[in-house]
Length: 70
Image 1 (cartoon, rainbow, N blue to C red):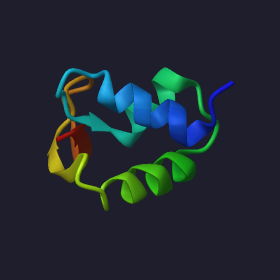
Image 2: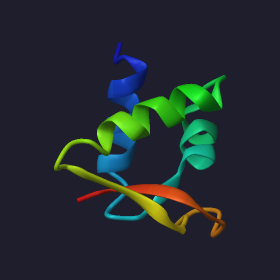
Image 3: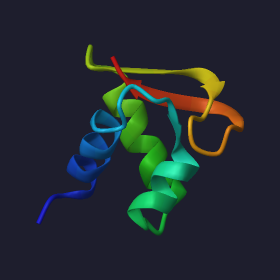
Image 4: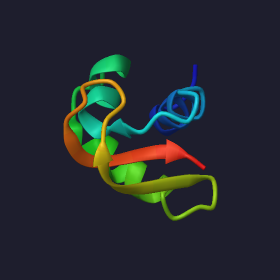
């Protein structure tokens, strides 16, 4: 079974370039802690593979910090 960071990474990568907020990632993956998702997405954003910036979530359409696969 994949770890939580692996599940988050895979979900964002397979999102087809859509920007996603932490709340939607948390809800889709049924994760109990929002802070855990924020820590993972912040860490992923330090790599070349991901971009995290203020924007609109492709799922809920709210303005928030979002992440997408680069």
